[in-house]
Length: 361
Image 1 (tube, rainbow, N blue to C red):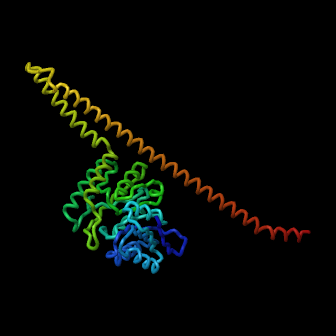
Image 2 (cartoon, rainbow, N blue to C red):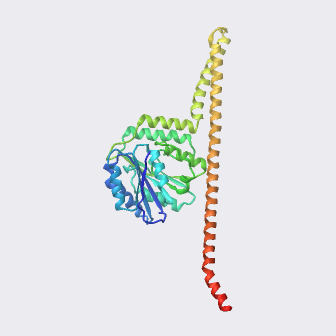
Image 3 (cartoon, helix red, strand yellow):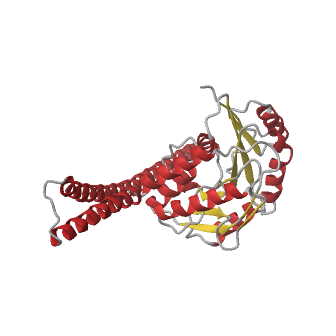
């Protein structure tokens, strides 16, 4: 698959902030989206770049972005011909970003760009925090103009997902976030769809990175067509919940089966006490099957939880290995630069030394 990236940055200096904006058929939102983002970030006094990712748009989003990038060197365009999903777009945008802080926001500005300076301020004020998550469900947050059905699905879906992972976050499915660069560099991301938001939080928490939640305001889309898909979103969120915390599924089903077995067992005891028990009836066999099956399902939940713990340890180990590799690369680069400087100084000193020797002679 052919991909193109247009980099109009005229300086090799790394910007303070990168704003990644995934887009798919967002021509209607383009006239104001990037301008409002630029206006909000510029108020912080930090240098920035806007990485606009055209996710295989079928309208003229790409050509419009390229025109804007030619007029403003702070706009960088990443594009490819086939729609791959938000997760893929974000991963391409993260990879193309050069800022020390990497933020992400929707192209339709469901979250106002005014949230960006607040997230940047949080990271500046709290060096112990690794990434910021915007949440309309946190205390002080709000949702305005969002269809009631979609809002309820999102709110309750996030509550279920919050039970499946640590961190105490009230929103783990939103795009409004800000990361220190090393967070994204040390994570191996794979999702191509909206599940990437869950994947990032899950892997970041497992790796030991510390989040903070910032109250935000979610507004309904004004222009363009919503990309929300109820069935696909709910299915992916439920699967992720069970993947993250298997005991939620196996524990519930196992407890239900065990409960049926215990109820059946109680019936057997009652029949035995009243003298109406017939050992040849299938109720005895059914009770035994239910109790054994329920116990096995509960054990599957326990084993699944152990697998999750092992996976989290693996993420921490991967983080440590990558950090060590970065340290080695940094030391190697510094050593190479030191040797180069020493060689240059030696070469510069040769003529002066030779002249001094001639004068002494």
